[in-house]
Image (tube, rainbow, N blue to C red; front, side, top):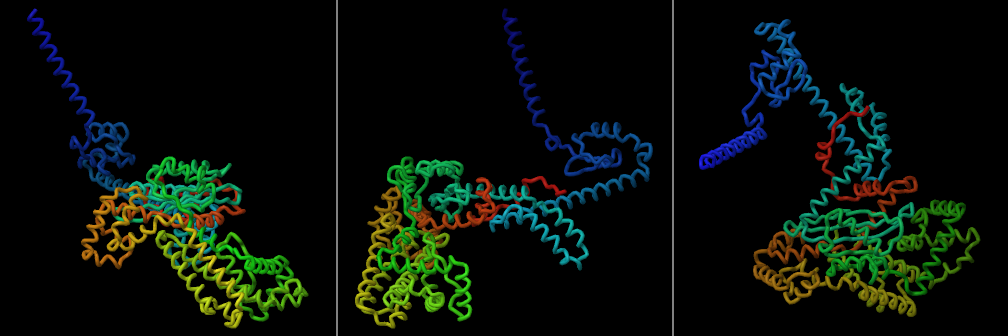
Length: 640
């Protein structure tokens, strides 16, 4: 029994050892490769089998094939079964055989060079196709214009008549792939590439904020425009790009907008809790207390900051509240519409302005939704007012608009034109890309101070800042009109003071961003509460920075981002990056809608949602696609 036990044990040991040995052999077989076994193409194979080395693999010069296995017996089997007649025609070791193999090698090298040159040309053609499609997308042109560009190239071939390689140039132009479908695909691929770049930026961002606005396109489809601004607290690189354009084919309630925005954030891997703030146009569907977009978002992110666009609030403050100014504006609009909506009268009026060499060649129509429209209409109307009076007299309509000759009405018109010029200047200061919220708030505060100055000067009869009014009343202002103008400006100042309350929490944030070395430490607790950051480390880091302010003297004259790039303190840098990420207005969304109206016009009303978003993304993004990556991921072919 002991023997059996010993034998069994030994057998078991032997069996186990054999199993392990087999497993090791099997593992070695799996990991075997040409490089691990030191295999290489031997020099003697060239004369024996007409096989040479190409990129580390055996290449047959006779059939121009790459042989899969780098073994002498495998190479010999291929030679014997496929090219056995070579030994009969060209005996081994003979001079004819050596010459034959040399010629084969030269032909193979030339063929390889041709293939590489062809591939290089194909890559260049593909790159040109991408860049032409990029330009078409940036300018909002139809996809079919790609063929027009190609035809323009071909029609201008006379430019190449004095070149020796004209035929090659024409051949390459003809090989450009610019059909409607090809341009569509290229723009789609570039948009996806831009989206991947934005995803990479978002993944490394410390803080991000959104700007959202909704408008309707030419096909009556509601479009939700979402922009994102993210800041990296390590490098303080600020990235601003279109996050998504979502089509809302049914209702546009707060829950519908929130659903579309959540889908966009999910596609870009943005968790709701990571959003610092959102800025909207202030519509009920956006800012509704119970069912608006902000209310829906705060269910998932209670600390979310929400702001009403500063430019929209400025436009609301600029609305005419006084009845006498509204009557002046209504009269101006009636006169302009009377002239512009009658083709014959309009032609005669334009001819009159041309004849008398007027300040302008025409009057412009008023649009209530355009921020700068009222100022442009009033300025031009006042400049050509004598010509308008003369024209109305000629056509017998002077009695219909007899108010134009009233001195008080004209004085009111001049005052309205002057105050509107000031409002338009403010509006232009608030517009623009990449502006921080602190810059916009500074513009508003400056305008409030200007309004106080205007009130004081009007009370003294000083019309320095009202040049049109000065010329109209000849520097002598009626007492009642002066009191009315003072009341109007005072009312406007009260509107500007009452609004922008949602930005009060950023009052000290802007001061911290601009002047961290002199910022009151006791104010940091309010910012910590607003942005959900721990108070104690913020205060400690701010005190440390202020205590060593002499080491940062050089930075105080640099830009905000450059200064904060060199200031230490993890929590302090995170707070500043959150403040810098906030959108002060939805101007960028309004600019996007302007581009959308050019792209999806009445001539392209059937443009699909996907193609609209792809082209719009290319049109408004501040970045460029990675053309090298796009080309390397494609199989290059020449068009037929």
